[in-house]
Length: 314
Image (tube, rainbow, N blue to C red; front, side, top):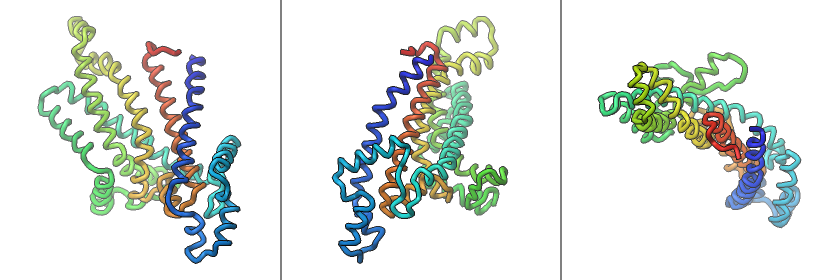
């Protein structure tokens, strides 16, 4: 098993290099000179030249790229062009908020999606099945920003059950923090819930026709035990795989949710860096997102191996 983990980690190296290169290129092709954004349209050519020299933007692209990789190898993401703060510090300050929101979205998606999928499968063709299918279709159809605004209007403004603006204060007022997290997590997890319910329903429909399920029924095993222990155990493999893959999407989708619910996080940092053409901060954020996605995918592979020992370990 350790050999498999080691091999899997080694395969991440070329993936990370490719992603980091892509991050460098994407940031460089963003239109607009950061010197003009920071110094203003009235900046003199001499001032712009001094800015380019101070930030390394006057160097050829290949030299900027090598400097970028050299910094990364030392664990240094550079300093913000605007605030001069270390990029790594800025990212680490808000990363817990994004991870918290993403994990809460996964929790909502799985804890609601799996039971809904099982219930729909057990009522195949019945009104409960149709109700679940229509409900999940609604979850897939609603744009995230529309559902976010509706939730704020109904549950925060009209009913007053949840705070309108998230406080987001860490390690203080746990109940207030949980209440401020509830609506964003529900909004982020709704789409995932719909997908998980459909994956679970489809998997259950197939498994319930398998020979070992018919054998269990012939032996008189209770129906609930067949469903929740024997059938669902096999379906969870597909759910684990989907959850790992979709977690990467959730991290990206958290940008919009953080903005609508006024939560701190990587999303708000990305928008600010884009507006001000803060190359180094934007570059560091793309790197952070890329590393998160690669690590989540690797963790999904490992979970897949634990869930199904039949998977070859290489």
